[in-house]
Length: 174
Image 1 (cartoon, rainbow, N blue to C red):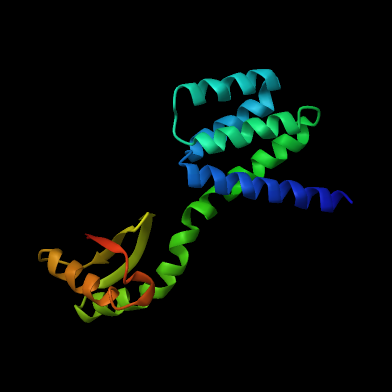
Image 2 (tube, one colour):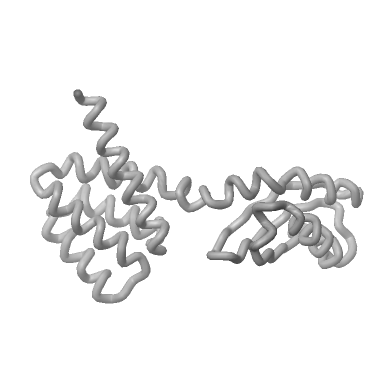
């Protein structure tokens, strides 16, 4: 029974994390709200959230969801804390989730191109903004201009199905 309740709170936290990420609410905002819930009366937390909404801070849907949760758990502060705890724990995962599959699809290609140039591949980080995929590729040993390498990688990646319809912005960090 207790474990089932914890699963429900985790699912609610996942939902909140997804909404927070999708609405553009920052991870720091979510952390701040968790701390406020832990240390302040709920009317104070609700006032803070309404203040943020009034200031037109990014993440409107996230703030509205937390406001709903404050009302839902008005008599169960511990559960509200758990929901926000799970949301904070899972925020980074849901923020990176869209790029995880893309990274898996293209990392081998990138590594092969980098190593074919006699360079050492140091990894890739990605951020997806709508149809724009920004990639930062770390390499060691590059002594010339990075643009030809970036263009070669971009050309190769455009042949991969998942990346074909994305606008790639490739940065070589060396």
